[in-house]
Amino acid sequence: MRTQVRERFEGQSVLQSFTVPRVRSSVHFNDKKIWLAAFLLRCLAMSEPSLDIRAGAGNRRPAVIVARESGLQRNLTPAQLAMLGLGSTIGTGLFLGSAIAVKLAGPAVILSFVAGASIALPMMWALAEMAAAHPTPGSFGLYAEMYLHPWAGFAIRLTYWLCMMVVVGSEVVAASIYCRLWFPQTPAWIWIGLLSLLILYVNTINIGNLGTFEYWLSMVKIVTILAFLVLGSALLFGLGFPKVGLANYTAYGGFMPNGWKGVALGVILGLFSFFGIEVVGSTAGEAADPKVAVPQALRHTVSALVLFYVAGLALVVGIVPWKQIDMGASPFVRVFQTVGIPAASNIMNFVVLTAALSSAVANLYFAARLAFSLARGGYLPAQLGRLNKKDMPMTAVLASGGGMVAAMMLSKSFQESLFVSMIAVSTFGALFAWLMTLLTHLAFRRYHHRDAKPYLRLGPPGPWASLAGLIAVLAVMLSTWWVPGFRIMLLSGVPWLVLLTVCYFVWRRNDSRISGPGE
Image (tube, rainbow, N blue to C red; front, side, top):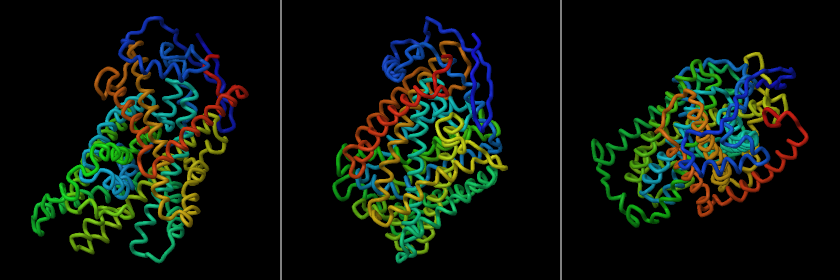
């Protein structure tokens, strides 16, 4: 059947025509294997039972949804995509947030980060498959709208957008901590203000130049981490330096001083360190060849992160006793201070500073694209969906910088606890996004298998990888209740989703623009 859909964006009315496939009564993806996913999807369907998992995703009008987000330049190369992913991910999670994980798990933080990597793999497979099929800046938010329910697309994008604003703010707070190692008398809010202006400027230049800037900034981090791995190995095994040995792995309470509970809680910080790989999915809307570039970039990003995180932290806890690692400073800088190499300490501090700035630039890029996507979908003011002469969403960039303004204002009163609190709040958005992305991927695969639609498969066949990842993410989300400083995540996140849901359905009743497709 043919359905006429009228969409509005950038002040213009666009009449799109598309085909809605008939609903089939038979399902070929083995219903028994994904009964949990089916149950969750039925819960999400709420007022539209005809749009549950059996109805497929074709009536999510993907052609219209993708078309409304057009206009961005497609100039990013596969290398730039990978560097944007690494730039977004290698930041406070490795260089500052890892100190919190070490305090929770001790030397067994190595196991925590391995577990975090194992959860990140299904997420990477799911996102890459869907991004290759639908290269849009709205990324997983658009996929949730197409394959689950309009509420899902609305909730995931708005929640993640706000949390990404907090992430950018936390990166700037971390950068100010690094700056104060050199200038301890300068107030943190001054550094936050100056660095925020720099990050905003970089995000307003041409997308090709932004990609080049982020490429080289990320390259500095990668080269430095590789150099750290070489130097750390030499220190640990006494190759040209006094031998540190392996004693620190079992000192101060053994390898697992806080038991398996400490390891489990450390997984939260380990998983936090992988948050940011989602940026690669959003870059699909500006990639020159997204079907090839996005899966390739995600594979390279996750592989590099596993090496850097696991090997890097293994060296950190081997060289520095875990009890001596301060949560207010980078454990990587602490390594060089411990072995008496002050020049290297300053160099490393500069690197972790650039890492935080690089991560802030990439995450602000992602936040702005989410705001752009929400505006083009009619969920935010239309001004946020407009492009300037460089085809950049300037207004969305400025609006997405709100987290840096909040960080500057709050730093005066909550200087000591601000970083941990901002990580906790932003973690909810990331975990919710991962949870919904894995759930969406189950519906994505179900639809393509049922209708024999071709797609690029990267993960194992069947639903088990995404289902296992979904359960693991849900378990991590619930366990944050017992992590010091992270209880605020659930205390703020759950009421937010309830409020968001109420607002959505009240709005939906009065606004036909966000009604279900085909109604």
